[in-house]
Length: 463
Image (cartoon, rainbow, N blue to C red):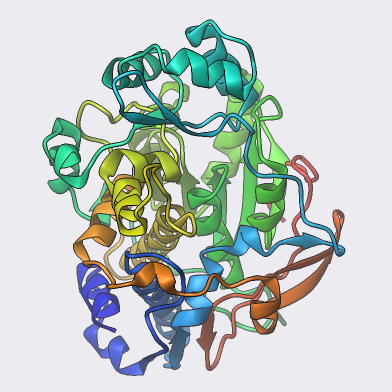
């Protein structure tokens, strides 16, 4: 409960709302020395409170929110429990992804889930395109030199560092200076209501709120999925040329429509400008400055659509020498000392990750929280707003929570252990078994009104 309260105060939510939040359950839900369940409970709980507050702003009706730590923790592993029919989905990870020992006795993690990243690693190393060839080539490198070479080539990797080694880097120091959740006013656009419900439709916290979701993989899509479960009209925008990971398209596509646009072409940019002019939230997970190059940075978006809530999710934040470095949850764990700490606790020579993509999921809920707080501020104060969150800053938050003694001895929940937290959805992919929304809300129970659909199923237009 303490972490939820701290996060809610950071978001400057109404303190009275905390009187309507109940948290129950033990923190030891997943095998980790880190307080992953507390991280899940806090981020899910504050996001649910923000949804309840949106509903209160619209209707004057206060509702109760209940967070079970077990449900929150299992939601952080939603992709692990996905089933298509009775089958597991395709493997999430490329076989080359993982930890490798370098010539100086360091360890480095490669992230090769996209083909062009895998091909780039193999080309840089000058080796055969298989695990044995990569491992042999990496043993000929100094760890720090390889880390730098891969980053300079725009590839995805991270040298395994201790928390102390990470803290000495300029990027860690830059991360320490930025807020966990930043909500900045961009202009003085006139106030707008949070959303408008369609006549005859039951009122939900985000009914009538239009969200453009320009994100892939986990953190950004979780944010869009969370807004969708509270009633937002979420339109996912992908590029047909961009790679995706099929199981994540399914798991994180719940509640969304899906269209494609090519922002390299003027027709695609013009279509996005038209969508933006009628949107309430613009959610994006590209590196800082990437969309600005196409005319869709936060300031440009606010000029095109005064009153927009622009949400930016990045790996290493918008400040510091690594702000343009490509990154994913597992890489941030490796770079920041989390993977080292987990290995030390297990007595393992090889680094170990958390038992879930906790930084991704938590950052996704933080982004949804920020978007809903900004919508409330827009309703009362007016203005366009910029929300910023970063995986590395979320990781710093997790590390600040301290460690759980013997935390890795907690049983690892398998599919049959969590059947009571799963649901079945019929979709174009088949019958899906997937996680339920983790929060419980007394007046507006969260749910997804649409099944996930293949990329590009829908036209790029609002209903």
